[in-house]
Length: 97
Image (cartoon, rainbow, N blue to C red; front, side, top):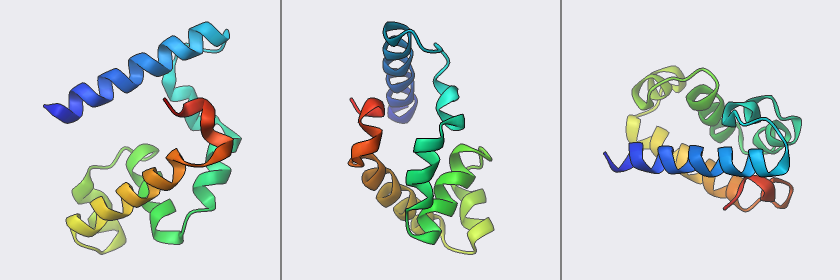
C-alpha cells in the first residue's frame, strides 16, 4: 500500500515538473533519456542489471532475483543501492525532488 502511494506521488511530481518545464508530461519518457542510462551503466554490474530488469523489463522483484540467480532479498538490496546512487548523481538532479 505504501509503495503504491509513493509511486503515485513520484509520478505526480514528475508530471508536474515535466509540464512546468514544457517537456513531455509522460514520466516514462525518462526511460529514453540518454543521461539517465549513462548513469545507470556507470553503476556496478549487478546494480545496473537489476535497475534495467526492474524498470525497463518491468519484472517483479522475484523475477529480477530469478534472472540474476540471487535471492529476492539480494535483489531488493541491489535495487536500493542502485537507486540511492542514482539519487545522488549530479547529472540527474532534474529527476530528484
